[in-house]
Image (tube, rainbow, N blue to C red; front, side, top):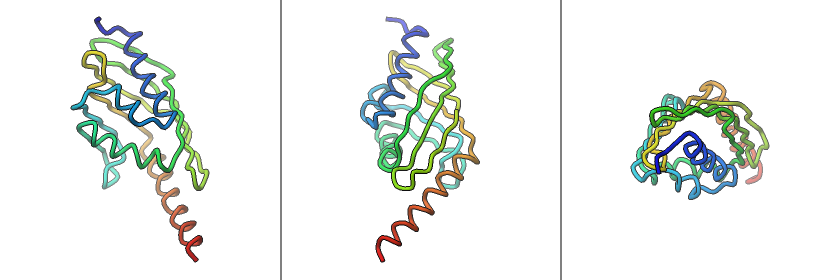
Length: 148
């Protein structure tokens, strides 16, 4: 079956639905084994992050799922020449501090067959970095206070 816009969006939406349930394996089931994931932020130096392979993506997603609840849905989707372009609405709530991050970001999705081969995400980098720094700092303070 040739991939069309409807099926491409279903695959992307299935991935976001799994993420919203906290189902990492469900997310990964929508990707090819040798996937490439790129994000304009999140790297060790605060710059871009690039990951290859399901195991590496699992390794990145699991710690996020462990500390935060998320809901993400595609608000806009267009598909042409094997590439999906989406606007994603997202809500992240830290499980300990209850701080939230709400916003939208863009995704470029390249498909191979009926799976995602390459995912490129473009976030408001400053907003994302500020949120995770705030969470890290407050969670560390809370942990220290509980240890006393």
